[in-house]
Image (cartoon, rainbow, N blue to C red):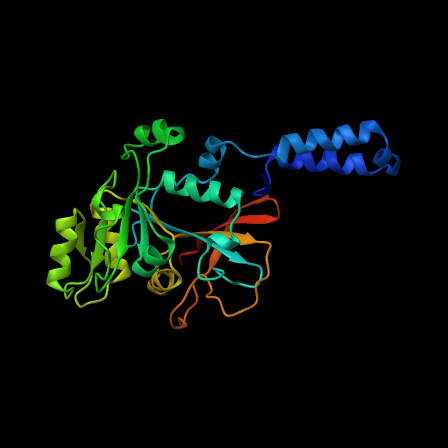
Length: 291
């Protein structure tokens, strides 16, 4: 893993050292030149520890207050070079080991993981698990041993016999509208899920959803999509940060982008906050610019 942005003193020193090793072409074929390159790789191009990843992706010390209680909603998505958010219907096909380490780290930092019902069905969601590597960090932050999963669904057309609902470490939440089918609400609650109403009709209002979670103390929020849900968060102006893994693949086809839904009249603008690289994958972080 290499940090490309922001440029730190260590990054700058490594780059200057690398440049000095290339000034004399004779270094290419001499042992000293090879050792120098190897030293630099050991310093900057290596697999980061989970602690290093957690530090790099830490939530801001001060959370936003644009909708209700302070909270921070970040999204984690992966996309190919040509914009596909999945291949053969799933995102795993365009991921990598490094991407999955980032995925696990982002989950381990969150209070709650928000996902759309279709993504839960397609990706076979299971309860988030407690991980020893992050136990002390979560305890110090006053967090539960694992993040809660919050499923956004208007119809509640979900299989409530799955472990996600019957045996999570932290009770699974279901975000729905006031007009949700009463029988499905009862089925969700019978399975052990906690139903939160975040909309006056059948649909869930994105701003009310993030506010409802924040009011329960779930302020460090992470959404993993799918594209339609992320598009709704973007359109509502409640997405604070996008963590996008850019996969060095080209898939063509008609796969979805990372966001779906109608075009919004006023595109949200984001600024690059960090950029990492490993194995040809770019791991970007963009934060919303608020006026």
